[in-house]
Length: 215
Image 1 (tube, rainbow, N blue to C red):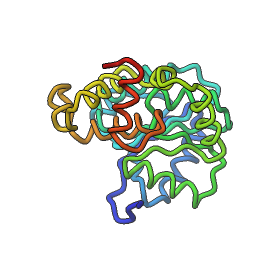
Image 2: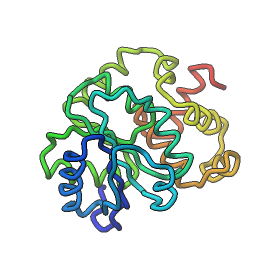
Image 3: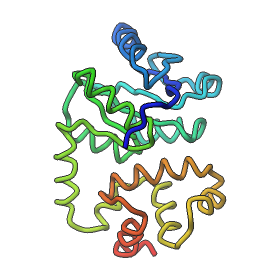
């Protein structure tokens, strides 16, 4: 169930085109799920440290950014931050690349306002969201991969590390202690990992790890 009574997430919007950035800020300022505290054309480590955002909305149209590097860099400063990629194009490859890199959501700029509200609340509550126009394609490609090993290849290095510990029987609190991460951060990683593996429970994820030869 999606909560309806949570504190709005401190949000930063990253968009290279200044006019679009301001338009996006105006739009998101009207949404009860977020509290926009900044916007700009690029990630600014000093601003991340100062503002400590809980959500980053990242415009990526026609970008050559290494998303894995961008997301890992952001989470090295703000470990618990939620990260949403925002695009003008319904591009399955870009969506796949975004989710593999560790994004919590892939939104399209032509989303209807009610759908945007639902999507933001889903992400704010710790789950992942992919635009429905692309979600089916993502799942089909996962099924087409066929083998657990191929599906595991979508995990980031940190997600794979956590999965090995999950398969080893460790609880989230114990995993956090081993990796020097908060239990909340571990839960966020688990949520993204479940989406990539198309599972809904840690036992299912552990089975995947064993079948893929990770244990």
